[in-house]
Image (cartoon, rainbow, N blue to C red; front, side):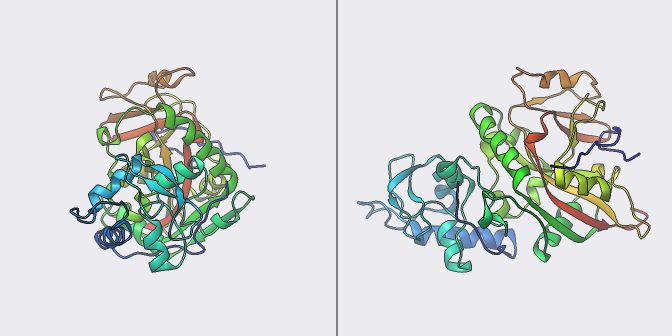
Length: 344
């Protein structure tokens, strides 16, 4: 039987039965620091003189422009020509562009892409991330599995935090319209009620996710990237139909994830050549119930219908686990094939 995270029985996976501008290719940046610096510079240029009577003010810094997350949409169109409306800051200042990513991506990469805050203002965040190659076909149906060196390197960086000898040999991004439709709709529902700051649980994966990917995470509802070790067959089934909650585990019923690669590696099944499989998933944690240390097999009762909580975070001697019951809160975005030294 295929073990799932938390020492659970096999995941039971079943076969599966808003226009927004998007990228026709994936942006492949270099390092996070360089990405952030480039975005900050682009923002300073594109937002400069955006508001009337700012003669004594300098261009906003990268930190200050991030306040646009609480902006609203104005009547004027974005000057980049993406078709969206320009942003209005919380102080009423009118910007020339719709969001912090639009000007940079248009200038540097020749296509339109938007931060999550802009997607929320424009379409409730229902459209796929800007870096999906299939996004231009939304809302039509599609299922594509797309690899790339950028994704492989990001996966290796993430795994090596706790598995120093690990190397991702191949990484496929799952671009599935039906899975995204369910996930983005549930994410929009959670946006109304999320109440716990992600800083309270701060997943370790957040430290290894590239800056460009972070701009598509909705931190207001504790959307994060988490890991799940499994087999190739299970991963492929999940990529078609998503997870189904298991019936038992350290913290009761639910779908289990970890922010430590060493924890997820325990449940990753090996091929004969030593290759193992790990999923990197978006998980919208929503309102989080943080448990006391130790196992609690009744903890999933906190996720019952009508509960104020949407997810659990529990810790045992083996590490931290994240649990959700509603699998619409999960999007299995990447399948990573990796190897590590036998001794590690």
